[in-house]
Image (tube, rainbow over all chains, first blue to last red):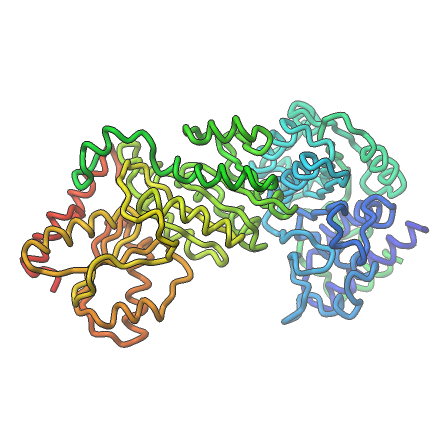
Length: 267
Length: 321
C-alpha cells in the first residue's frame, strides 16, 4: 500500500467531514492519523468488519476520543460502516457523534472523557493473559491525557500484572486543549517516568508509518512480562501550516478563506 | 451497638454483612471461572478465604478506585463477571465517572459491593459516611441499587444481581444484626411486614429495624402500622407500590440518608403526585449537612430523631398526622 497516498486521502476526508458538519476536532485527528494508518492498514490490528466481533480479535481503544475524526474516516474507508454515514457526522440522529461510542462498528468503548482507556485496556489485557488468549490490546491516548491521575494508577496496575500484551501509544504533540502541556502540568521527563513505572518504553516519529509498523510488529512478538508504551512524537494539526503546533487550534474550524489554503496544503 | 438490636446477639455473632456477601460469591466463583473480585486494599475475613481459594481472580489492586472501576469494565467487556469491593464513600464517589462510562454506559456485568452504608462508619467522620451515595448511584442509567437490611437479604441480593448480569451496587451495613428475612424467602425488590392497615411505615436497609421496632411499640398501644421494606432502590414497580399505598392513609418514611439522597422519599412523593393520592407523607431522614467531628450512629440518630422511641413519641403526640 502507498501509505503517503492513503494519509493524504484521509487527511482531506477528515477536513471535508468537519467542514461539512461545521464541527469536529481536526488538529487532534491529524496528530495521530499516521499511527491509526499503521495500526489499521499495516497488518497490526488485523481488524475488519468480518472480525469485529471475533472473541480473539485484537482490541483497539481510542482513549483520546476527541481525535475520533481520524478513526471514523479509517473505519469508513475499511467499510465498517458506509461512507454515507461519515457524511452525516455530528448531525442529529447520526451514528457518529463528536466523541465515539460503542454502538459504532469497530469501536470498543465510549471515549471523550480522558484517562479511561488505559484502565479499561488493562482489564482487557488481564483477561487475555489469565485466559491464555493470544490477542493484544492497543490504546492511543493523548499526552495531555497523561496529566490524569488515573493513567498513573493504570500504569502501576499494568506493571504489577506484567501485561506484555498491552501496547499503549502516546500521541506526544506537546499540546493540550488550550496550552502546551509543559506550561500547565509538565510531563517531562516523560520517558523516564514511564521507565520508572516499570514499562518498556520506545520513542518514535509518530508520522512515519513504515517505522511505526516495524516497531509495532516487534512489540507484538515481544513477551517479556513488561507492558509496552510508545511515545510518538507528533505535530498537532499536521499537514496544515497554520494549525500545526498551535495552542489556538484544538476544536475550531478554518474560516472560509482558510479552507482553500488548508486543502491546497493537503494536496 | 444501637439499642434496637438485642445486645446478646452482637456479642456472640462474629460474622457481618460482608461475610454474607462473600458466602454466595464463594459459590459463584467456584462454579464460574470467569468471575473476578477487585478490591482497593480492603480486608475482611470472608475476603481472605476467597483470596486463598481463587488467588488469580481475587485481585487487590491497591488504593486506586478509579482504575479498579475501569479495569472491571475492561474485564467485563472481555466476557468476565466482575465484583468490586470497597468502602462506599471511596468506591462510589472517587470513581463515579468510571462507573458511569466504563461500566454503566456499556451495561456490563459488574457488581459493586460497597461497605459502610449510612452511618456504619459513624465515628470515622464524614469522609467515611455513606449518606449521599443512594442519590448519586440511583441516577445512573442501567445501575441496579440494592439496600439489604439483614444477612439473608444481602445473600439474596448478591444472587439476584448475579442473575441480572447488569451493573449493580449492593450497599453493605456494618452492624451485627439478627435476620428478619427467612432463608426460604425468594428475593423481592420490596416486601411488606405485618397486616395491612391505614398506617404505613416505609424503610430500606438499616431503617427496617427502626420501623419494625416502632410497629412493635405502637401495637402495644393498639395502633397498627405495617411496614414496607425496599431491598432495591432503582427500577421500582410503581404500580405495585401504588396498590399498597392507596389503601393507606398515613405514611411515615424512615431513611438513614440525607434528604437529597432519600430515594424512597422521592419515589413515594412521585407516586403520590402521579396518582393524586391524598395520603399524609412524613419523611424522617438526615439533614443535608456534613457531620463533622466524631459522632457514633447512636449519637447522630438521637440528634436527628431517628430512634424508634423518638418517632413513636411524635406519632403519639400527633406531630405527623
